[in-house]
Length: 284
Image 1: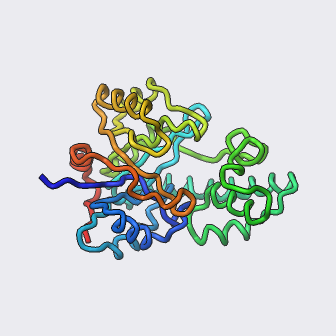
Image 2: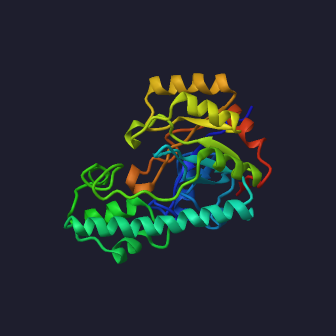
């Protein structure tokens, strides 16, 4: 039996990663992966470049990390192998991206009121045409000498949840996000549900609700999940009939270029991919 190493959660400069899609491909190959998913925030803009750069023996699973919210808390979903031209899903991701721009401008205005010399032009330069996210603002804050690190920016002092310069944006209810991805022929996985560093642990009753709504899997192996959390999540996944996945959530230099540090077991990968009908895995 062929053993496949697949990292199902990676970002590029098409959103808030620091590496261009082609470089993400090269790093995935260098990490010894057989497959990886490019899951930029609310966009598939990096897929074409990544596909063109694929070497022989490396497979690309087209995906996206879709923004969701429930009761004021972020609930992110990883969608894979959906039809990117599906009208309703595409319209929603356009709305989310537009809201990201509005949110970023509002955050910058708040930062300026707090005495932080950060500009819209600076943030868009750092984003380089990618989908605007708070990490771009955090990097601008570092450039301006406001904070010394990304982690310092993401605190209540600044742009973290509930922070002095925090602004909410448009996001989908996760059950609706599941419906949209399925309508486009894709499959969905709940991203980093127990990552306390993100301000909220997704409760088991919500995971159960989303499973009833059609959720396909849950991200168990993630750098922000300790061993006890992984064991608990795996138990929840098996109880609910969900696929257990693994992903590095690599953002390039922002996360130490850790692509390949987590992987999905082959049986779980096979179980997930066979449910998708919207698009095919791309091979080099």
